[in-house]
Amino acid sequence: MNYLTVENISKSYGALTLFENISFSIHKGQKVAFVAKNGTGKTSILNILEKTDEPDTGHVIFRKDIKVSFLPQEPYLNSELTVEDTIFNSDNPILDVIKNYEKALLNPEDADAYQVAFEQMDIQNAWDFETQYKQILFKLKLDNLQQKVSSMSGGQKKRLSLANALINKPDLLVLDEPTNHLDLEMIEWLEDFFAKENITLFMVTHDRYFLERVCNEIIELDHGELFSYKGNYSYYLEKKEARIEQQTAETGKAKQLYKKELTWMRRQPKARTTKSKSRIDDFTEIKHKASQRRQDHEIQLELNMERLGSKIVELKKVSKSYKDKVILDGFNYMFQKGERAGIIGKNGTGKSTFLNILTQSAQPDSGKIVIGETVKFGYYTQTGITPKPNQKVIDVVREFGDYIPLKKGKQISAQQLLERFLFDRKKQYDFVEKLSGGERKRLYLCTILIQNPNFLILDEPTNDLDIVTLNVLESFLLDFPGCLLVVSHDRYFMDKIVDHLFIFRGEGIVEDFPGNYSDFRAYDDSKPVISAISEEEKKEKKNWKKNSTIKLSYNEQKEYKNLESKIKTLEFDKTELEKKFLNPELSTAEINELSGKLKVVIDGIEEKEMRWLELTEKMEG
Image (cartoon, rainbow, N blue to C red; front, top):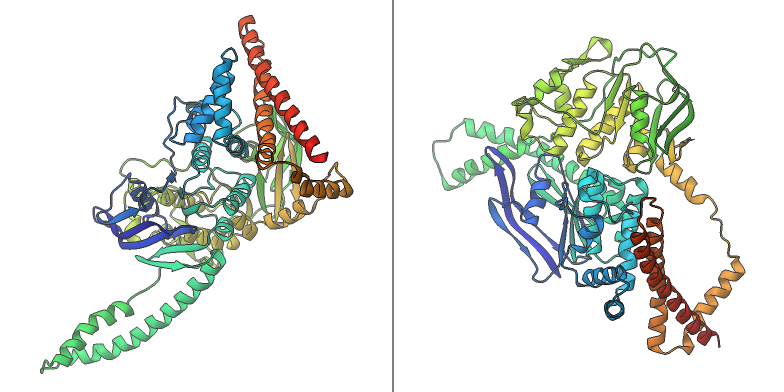
């Protein structure tokens, strides 16, 4: 079943042509990734699909009556709404039922309204849906349902927008960099979610493990042409390499033929027969094929950076807290020459704070940081650059340096560095405001590297970078002879670049793990899970479940399955209400009102538990 058809769309901005006559289609069940270099129109294509932009030519056709959700890079959220209001502010009828039920819980005096809302939850089978949407919010660390959008960080807004898209269960979900602002645990949960849910996906993502595990097709826009690969990321790499080899061979043949035809053309035959005219027409096509050249660069640099001394960076009993939140607690570490370390941990565990303390842009509460005299930091932060008005790309880099010295007296100029990071000579003289978000990140990276640091610190360098640029960056970093410290949620990137990891567990706990991310996951997953239930008990429980429902009617079996979800939901409501009693500023009237609401929820739990026990006894009897 065809969900989406894109026919011959083109887009230009003035003299800049992003793409021409692009066509593709998305069918039910497909999970498609769209891959291209930054600045070639990925986000423009998503904007055209979302109808926030129009193509210059062509059409976009969605199947009638399908439900489509979009996750843009910059979410469109009402800043006046809370997290809960944002979720309920949709056209999903089941969410309306849940909203009415939640409202009825807040008015315990109106027993009739509560009964009607409760019955509607049953009729619409909304209990499981409520449990699932609260689980999605929990997994994306959006626990405070009353938090206003206006007080949220950019990352929280992106996660709320993602939660909204997932909860609405669309037929087609269009995503722009869905793993940005997610920690590793969230990304792995999202992979599992997409594996289980029957959602058709079309996404732009730079996360190569995510591509590997989620997508079953990759569409690539390469030098203005569209190529489709019916497989995951590994399949794409294999087939792309074969395609480039074939293209290189064809270009070689075309060059030989071009030389032969050029000799013939120079003779300028006087008799213009039909055959010779046809040959002259073909010459133009042969010339075009022979002159094709791929702009792919392999970074192989012998950097001549300032030599690191015996003392690099030493942290002695460093502690840091923000109010009750402990970031570091007596942390000790001594960096060695050529060290390549990664940092992973959940959002909010202090990874960026640690980098700021290391580079002395933040101060520890206690402890000492000793930095060697020869250390020159290059610090790539998440904030990026703020260019001056009407500043050109090349001028931004030259503000920080004109060249990087190489060994044997050679050097790489600012222009050559930009070329290696996919800014051709023409692009280097564009104004910075014309660059895409990913191109600006790439330019910022060049401003760090041109300073020739010997201790490179990268805070989420892969955000908004395309896969082609990531490969270039990885090649550069593999050649980099200094110390390297990276915070990244890009598992593929971490596996390729780092030798060991600092695991930020929270509460000031930092573990030093000797290996890359895949090594850590294999180790972490192999740790035994402590269970209070013996194997014999599990077996008895499994057999009981297998045979127990036989004595219940069809409707009773259905009711029994729903009861656990209902009880779980009411338990969640009970916990939320109990938290509110911790507020010391509550008035007597507010305490009485909360007590009434809590009584309604507790009565509901008791009623459901009694019914659950009743059905359980019936099965056992």
